[in-house]
Length: 287
Image (cartoon, rainbow, N blue to C red; front, side, top):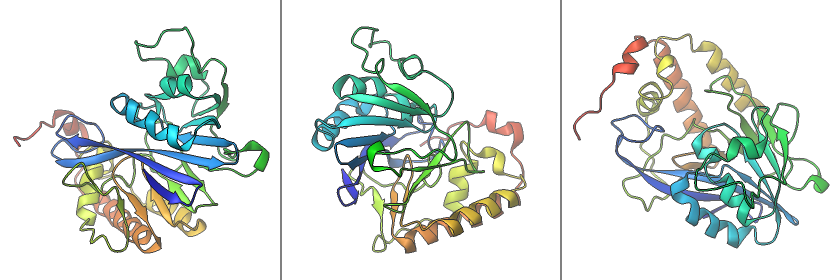
C-alpha cells in the first residue's frame, strides 16, 4: 500500500509476473508488473477506483479493511475490463457500497456479477445506485463535501475508457497508458520518483504500445493524438500519474519526462511501417 497524498489517496498494488500470458504487456515482456486499485478517503466516505483481478481478491479486501473500515464506499469502474471489474462483487459483499460509477448504461449488479462462484443471494451490488461516467459530471468521494474527480475521454484510448483527474491531489489516472515501467522482481518498488534512476526510453514506450494493445498506432496519423495530449498536459497541473498497471509516476520531473517519452514514441510510431493484420499472427518467442 502506497499513500499517494496524505490521508486522502492510497494506491493498492498487486504484483503479477510477465510471462507471455497477460494482455497488459507485449508477449515478449518479462519481469513483473503490478495492478493498481486506488482508494480515496474523505470524511465518512471512500471511493475505490478499479477493483483489480480475481487473483488479488483477498489481498485487496485486507487492504481495504485497514483503510475503509466502516465507511460507506463508492466504486468507480472506468472501463469494462477485468482489471476494473473482477472484485466488484466481493468488495460490495464485504463493505457498504451505495454507488457504482460505470462507463456505459448498465445496471451495476447485471454487469459486474459475472464470476460464477457468486450467486444472486446476498448480492451487495443490488442496493447500489448506478451512475454514468461522463464528461462534465464530477465523481465525488463525499457527495456532501462537493467537488470530485474530473472525467476525461482522452483521444488516445481503447474501448469506452475514461481517464480521470483529481485536482485536490493533482493526480491523473490514465488507465492502460503510462503502464510501461516494469520491475525485475515482485517486490517492486511500484513507483518512480526523481531518485529512481529509471532507464525507460521512448523506444521502450513505443514497443509497449505497438507490440500489444495499441498495435494500430504503427503507421497511423498520430499528430492529432499528440496535440490532444499536449493540450491536456498544458491544462492540468499533474504531480502524479496513476496508471492501472506498472509503476506510479511521482513528481513533476518524472511526469514531464514520461509525457515526453510518450510524445516521442507517438511520433516514432507514426513514421513506422503499419503492422496491419500481421498483429494477429504474432507468436510468442522462446524465452
